[in-house]
Image 1 (cartoon, one colour):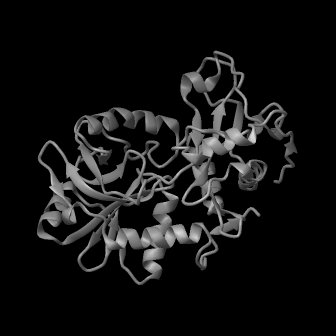
Image 2 (cartoon, rainbow, N blue to C red):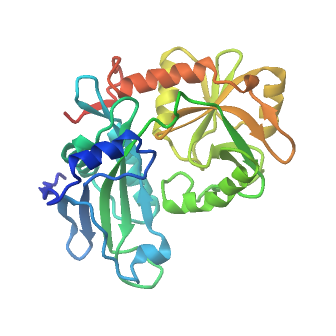
Length: 360
């Protein structure tokens, strides 16, 4: 199914000098571009209709809007990257579109056709291309969908709003990726088998905030969750997947099921395997992590996700004591994979897997 977007440019876009000033140090997710994409869904109208690119504006939602009461909501995160030749790349948007459909399916929401998802993202990038930061900055894109039917009662909504907003972001790490410290959550879990851990819904993130606050109280940057059944096996961080690198050059990452199937995670597995490395997707316990860090068998640990790409993990703290990984410094495997991935995203190297989609 393809939809033609009705393009309605903003009548009073941000003046150039204000935009330039905002792009100097945009931070993350605080500055927004002038436009958004909107597509509506109604069961009564036979599906998706009214695809538009319009000025970014507030939604009008009835106080009984389903999303406000029953949290039927999903989202994605991806970036547009400016190439040296001035063009713009998207990285694996088809994978985001597919995961968005999977999330919708799990949350009993209407499934948006993948080509409509990609078209909406591309149209926002095209109309707001002046907001693309240079250097290691990028345009962060946030496609999302909310249940908009007006009713109180526990059932799937029959109306939805799909939208894409965009936010210019600077480099996640000023002066290169610094190793992060993480707190092992023993009181809270992120997801259980049969739950919503594998989908990108807002509720998962709301449920992680208390544990993240606990991590910060203990002087850590991020929280890491253990499995809900045995409280032993590493699952993922508050918003990132995790990898372990061993002295034989092999990598281990927790298996899918209760964790988010990260697109950066999948890309790292592919790149490492293409380079001849062994990558295992299997459970890895906190006791084993502690033991392998002490013996030196574990050489590196790192987290990965769209926002930061790869963050080396330097220190792990928990109620049962702290430990460091390879002296708390960024390791060569994490940094090598990060460079490879970023170079593909910005079009600085070849793209053997056809992950790049050129917007222009």
